Length: 183
Image 1 (cartoon, rainbow, N blue to C red):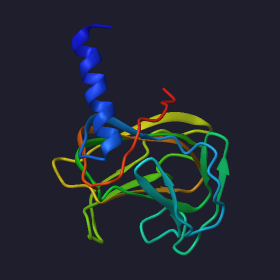
Image 2 (image 1 turned 60 degrees about the horizontal axis):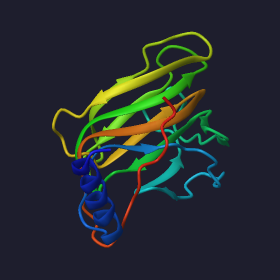
Image 3 (image 1 turned 90 degrees about the vertical axis):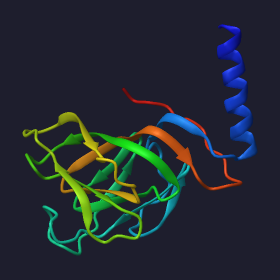
């Protein structure tokens, strides 16, 4: 390891420990061993607050359903929405979701919301079909400030969510760390 790389690592670690605003390339939500198993019950992973909520208009499953199961490596959405709060994060350029689509083409939908907004500013739906299709769904933010990521699944196993860009954590006094990556 070069001296420059070592100094950079020490500086990043110092900033993490001090809870200052920090830049990074990727933050990962692994969804491994989630301890919550009821709808609308929040939990935290890294800097992100998450919860599973009822389906809504525009989802493949009719509104008002919330059926899901935590798995060893992810969450199975069987007619529910996974909501990830990103309001304390700036500089997001792309979101990548690793999932297994079980029921068919177009049954998993991704919504990106602006902070405080109720309407999505970008929407992508799955484009693979067939059973047990592993895929990574990339969504580009187009320069919008990201407030939350919502993944609506009919029969889908969500393995991991990655947030990419020139990221800055804006909450003073909190620290975070990089998490493992599946791919």
